Amino acid sequence: MGTAPRYDPSEQSFSDLSGERVLVFGGTGFLGRHVCAALRSAGARVVTVSRNAPAGGTPDDSVPMDLASATEAELVRLVHDHAPRVVINAAGRAHGGEPSELLAVNAEAVERLAHALPAAPEPPRLVHLGSIHEYGTGEVGTGFLEDGPTRPVGAYAAAKLRATLAVIEAVRTRGLDGTVLRIGNVVGPGAPRQSLLGTVAHSLAEAAERARTSGERPRLRLTPLRAQRDFVDVRDVAEAVLAAATAPLASVRGRVVNVGCGRAIPVRQAVERMIALSGAPLDIVERASETGRSDPRWQRMDIGAAGELLSWRPRRDLERSLSDLLEEARRSRARRTTAE
Image (cartoon, rainbow, N blue to C red; front, side, top):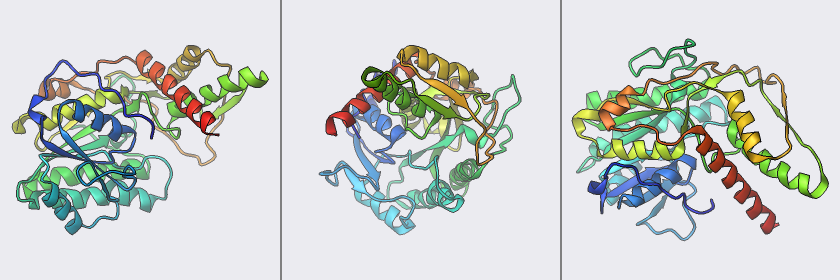
């Protein structure tokens, strides 16, 4: 897991979370770790809920629970025991897995959670992290609006949309205080190797070491870099979560809010810039996916609602996100080398 991410406080004050308990499902994952760091910096008493709960954790700071297999009754008991003010759902699976597994983790578990929270003696607010992929492919030159059409492509995107609809329906029919943040393509320190930019960053860290020791120039095979994506820094996402957790109920309850950079950035540009920043020798070879998977070609979010409802805006540009991702990949590589 490495060291906890450092949180750069935003210009806003989240002092009203001081001393409040917050449950974070998926708190040991990429997004969850940054969200937990931001919450702790705001003074919250954070309890991570994850099947990979940290070793040595206590019930006051971590709970081992797999959201995908937890029953509604178990979730009700968890909330009753910890009495959180806010529940953040950063759990999910984006890479790999059968469609049935992606559905169980990303949709069915959220449905149970959305049903369980209103049953608590003091129901907490739910901030659920959705995905830009719920929109599918956009028309070039346009931005996704929260009330616009959703055309998910693939099992993951379809499951994330089902989860969003479950949260909004629970608000309408069960009295849930819930909101969904639809997150863009997340980048920044700690991005998983399975993601495109995470793959490139770790490959560059390995390429630099191989160049020093053997003079090799590695090659990395990727699918064709034709897409344009809305990239958002993971630390900006954490700040948006804080804003949603503390916003007035009337501003966010029952709302879907886009959280992205508001720009469509060519993926090729991001990859080439990361290679340039690293200074490492690495050749990219583009080949069509053997699975025949077709990813969205254009994705850009309209983030006006986030500004109006959450007073939030992204504060880190892609250059910083890529630089920090590279640095974390280098540190991770060094730790593995030392351990060997």
